[in-house]
Length: 306
Image (cartoon, rainbow, N blue to C red):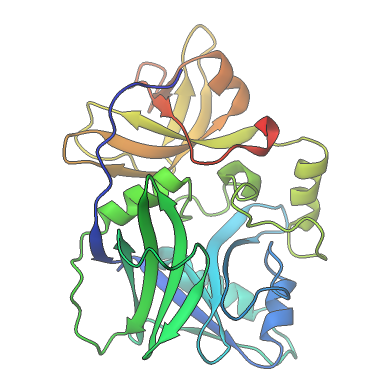
């Protein structure tokens, strides 16, 4: 059942996304190298476009989720969570071999600021460079526009450090953020990356491609990500915390992907849950008798229901 519980209104303003990290991939072979490593089509990515993508293990589990675009010099930028940036960069470098590719972490050089309710003229997934600052548009959430801007660390920082409004916007947009706690847990479709345009099913091979394609063409996706609210918590649940079905056949049926607390005490989260359990019973946090999740709509349709 979907809840009628009111959800706090979206925030406006800027936030320094200190937990985000940027990898810069440069060199003559950067585009073709990443095309063979990530789930989306890098060969068709325009200089003024961004896209979601994923980097998977050979078993098709996500080692990282990326927002991808080109910087003003034509290098490819990969935005991901800071807790996984170093290990992902190290793993990618293992496969460079003789390709002309350089993979760099940009900590200490660049920072990412999220902006809510401003620059509505920037279309979703459009990229604009202006005076050394790159802006990347994302889809609006409940009428609130969103964009990132990437700037030099040496510039004065005007944005506050509280990034919870930005995290809440991502949850409302149904955009999961892979962290160290959820690394190697989800096939991309489990976090709805296909609904977000982050998987190209016509491109060539990449790590885990066979598993991802099989899940798509054979209808083997058994878990999906849903948005939910839960009350009565003193703090948001950790990413990766187990979820359980209720009723006589109670069992573990999913995990928390991301969560954020609102000022009124409501916790808003993305939950990767067994589709069967979601349809047939209540879902609970931490145990069969834990707080029950109240599900609310995502802004997009899941492919199975389209």
